[in-house]
Each structure stands twice: as structure tokens, then as C-alpha cells.
Image (cartoon, rainbow, N blue to C red):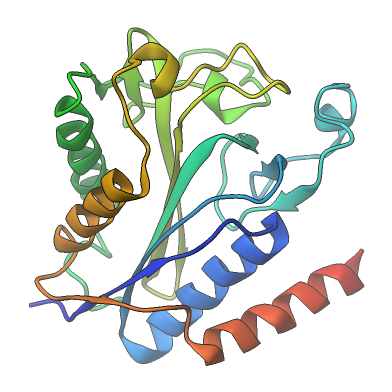
Length: 240
């Protein structure tokens, strides 16, 4: 039996803060045996690099070269965070899904499929991994089996990071195209009847929470998490 899910609905923040909060929540999940679900957006167009990605390819693309850049805890391709809804969940080692990475993807993505279907959007997992020898730089041009696809366009991708048995999974729902990568179109363009209002996003947040635990507690980011995130931000800037 899993414990309560701490639901955090954050306002748009800079990329370095968003990544620091996710990292601090993962550590807190491990030390407190707590479950966190966070929905957030980005205050400016930002590129997040996969944990092992080189910055050289970004610098060679004039559309992306001058955008703020952060590095994610998870691997995979770079994401242009602009017009999107991001989620992250942190599960302690005691959670039934913490040791079942594929099932965690399936459980979270199934919520998105059901939610989007209520807008009349036909969305489904891709079901296969890419066979390309060289992966594109941007995540939304890559192909992975758990991706959610609408009319051949990837609209949701997720990735994970594990730490001493705890797991962070985060993902991005592409809402609409960015001028920095207009070839990547979102659900609002693929299905004009879709609404990303605060009310509909709250419904999504509550459903995601309930798929991770039976009790949901909505709160702000705890002060200790904010303090730990601030330290992470300072250390990141110092490393540069």
C-alpha cells in the first residue's frame, strides 16, 4: 500500500529552478519515503539537455544556440521547453512501481491517453523503438515505444532517473509549436477542440496523482525542498 501523493502545481519558472526542484524532490522522496507529483511550465523558452548529451549540436543550430540551457537528470534527447505542460513524479524505493520502470511509463501514459480521448483526440503509444543508428538531437524527433503519438506526431515523451532505488520520471506534453522549432506541433494544433485551461490541467493532475496513490495532498513546494533547490542552483552556477 503506497502512502499519500503530495501534489504540487507550480507556476512557470526558469529552467534551472525547475530542474533543481525535481532533483531536490527525488532526494526528499528517498529520505522521507514520500511520493511527489509536480506539474509545471517554463517561464521562457529553454533547452534541457539529456544527462549525457553534448552541447555542441545545440550550438550548431542557430534556432537553439542562444536559448537558456539546463541539463536534466534523465537521459535521452534535448527538449525545447516552450509551449508545453511538464510533469514529474518521484517515487521512493517502497512504492510498487519504483522497481518496474516500464509499468510506470505505462501507468502514467495511460492517464494521458484517457484524458486526451475525452477531447476526441485519438492518441496511442508508438509501440516500437527507433531503428535509426544516429538519433536526432531533439527528443520530439526521436522514436521510443512509450511515446504518445497523434496522427504520427509525438506529443508526449517521458524519461527516468533512478537513485538508490528511488525513481524520478518526468515528461513533456507538447501543447503547440514554438517559433524555435516550428516542425514540432502540439495537441492544440492537431486537435483544435483541446483545451489547456487551468481547470482541465487540474483534472489531469488529480488523475495522475490517483494512479500513484490512494490519497492526494495538494501543497506548495515545501520550504526545505526550496532551500535544497537553491543550493543546487548555486552549485550549478559555480560549476559553470
